[in-house]
Image 1 (tube, rainbow over the protein chains, first blue to last red):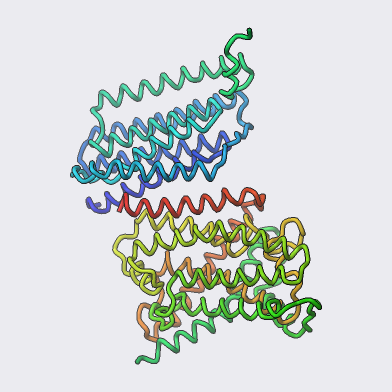
Image 2: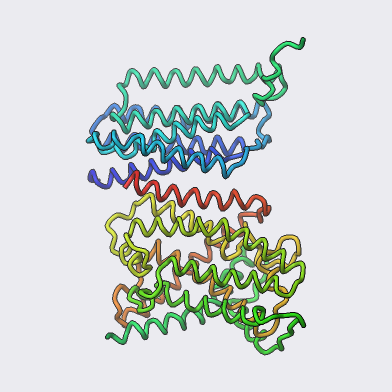
Amino acid sequence: MNIHIAAQINSFLAAFVLLTAFGMLVQRRMYGLVHLFTWQGLFLSLNTAVVGYVAQRHHLYISSVLTLALKVILLPYILHVLIQRLKVHKEIETVVNVPMTMLIGIALVIFSYHLMSPVRELSTLVTRSTLAVALATVMIGLLMMITRKHAVTQIIGFLAMENGLFFAATSATYGMPLVVELGVALDILIAAFIFGIFFFHIHTTFDSLDVEQMARLKEED
Amino acid sequence: MKVYPFIIEFLQIAVLLGVAPAFTGWVRMLKCWTQGRTSAGLFQPYRDIVKLFSKDVILADNASWIFRFTPYLIFGAAVLAGGVIPMLSIDLPLTSTADVIVLVALFAIARFFTALAGMDIGTAFGGMGSSREMTIASLAEPAMLMAIFTVSLASKSTSLSQMVHVIYSGQSVLRPSLVFALLAFILIALAETGRIPVDNPATHLELTMIHEAMILEYSGRHLALIEWAGMMKLFLFAALGIATFFPWGIAASGDIGFIPAAFLVMTLKLGVAGAGLVLIETGLAKMRIFRLAEFLGSAFLLATLGMLSYFILE
């Protein structure tokens, strides 16, 4: 496998990461979202391994395996359990105006391309072209957190954003130092547990995971 | 001037006219099998067409020339489109007269006149069908053009022959933009040919039919021509998809010796395309009409992502 083909595979996987990000943006069903998130993690992990091969950075293999264990197996499993325990698996969320959200997403992709084009000119890495995709994934995760009302969906948006950041690190500098990556991975894991606990609390207090309910938090006078 | 390309051109139109009903028959046959029914056979569409041709035409009293003219126009547009799309050989004389934008316009003209004819008689169903068809068209056409422009960007030309040639001899197979364009094209082709998530080709249920509602008043040879043109349209979209995204096996030069092999490969690919179509149609339920904006919006999104990924990633 030469560098040229590896670079093509890299951009191909980047395209799929972007596609799953858009898929999550418009997906209504809870389990569909978790599946898309799992796929995104898988593409990310494969991409990291390919970049590790291209750049001859062996610590990227470790972070690839870490991504696989955490974002493809553990986090989706935790989300599955959460969705089942909280009995929200049948819930179909109303997404406000899907075509409009898609158009905003496209605008975000163009914006990140525009923003990243100077960096692309300066960089000499093989992965420089995927930087715009990484930024776009972050922005789409953010957009998902803004447009959704369900707490679990917002968390998935947050995790998708983290995927984007990880992707950006891989494509901008061939990954962060291993210590940082391990730290971030641990953070994500702990965050997932804390989210779980918070979900249960929100659920018992409001009998729903709709964050709109939180507007009623203020005392009646 | 070479003679062979012209012979191939005529051969190709003959193949279009002859094989299109068999392709529809193949799709129907597979669909019957997947649903556990006995099929009417591969050649039932031919028998239908022959039967319709032998019947009398019944016209409403207030039918204008548009109503009588439309079947011939639709048929003509389909045949013309068949002359432009490279099915057997890349080297076709007609492709230099019409590029892919003209091709979209040809389909648009046929659709426009079908919608007019649907309203011409003044029945409620015709008008309803026309209005729905135009709603779908207004959403599908931008996405279609976007998908085509993505392929044109990759091949630096809007001429179909040139596009197929570039993809055919291309070095890089792994192009994200082409994959996105292909996905978008599949969604659009389902909408344009009136297949299941968008329209059900087998229904005459008044609430759900779209294409059938417009042609409800046609009979005899008019209906035969419209049905035949519909079959050709399905065939043409399959051929267009094959030519643009999987052209391998097509005769690259205008030599008549390569044509039998190209025909064989084309038949195989069409068989696979039909099986894929049946898988989609059996796996999905028909969509609510108000969900179509999302369906075609995703097609537009995919096409746009294809175009963007051409700039970003390639």
